[in-house]
Length: 168
Image 1 (cartoon, rainbow, N blue to C red):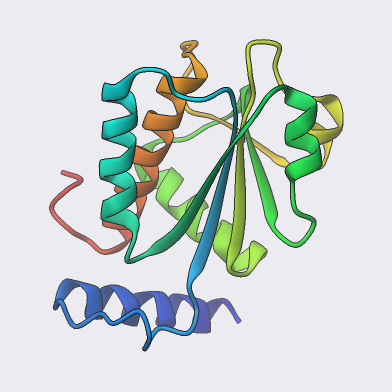
Image 2: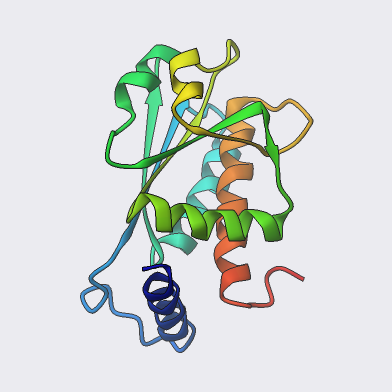
């Protein structure tokens, strides 16, 4: 099973690199949900996030939802997708390790993956217990900056998997 996934992923990025990619040809679109508490208020952060989202559009279908509080995040998590929570106590990864982790998550979760960013009060215990915990840094960031760092790392992971020059 994992071999088929990796082979399809390789073929997908090979077509993408040659500018032959056609979304109608690709039957297996990867779906990523990013759940976060609160909306981004700063325009420059939103513009940067949208730029990375645009770059990833050929690879991923990204849906962003903003919750009013952490408990609404729990309601929005889908049972048919793999759930990853960003938490200070989570596992720290390098960019290369994150790329490997990211591809393994697609194997486990099928074509659906949900990443949850908590608010200032953290994540509900129920959500932490039923998800994979990772940390982007030992530093503390606002949820707005975290969204930008996350999507940049997702873009970097796809570029690492394609062996492009973006990650040097």
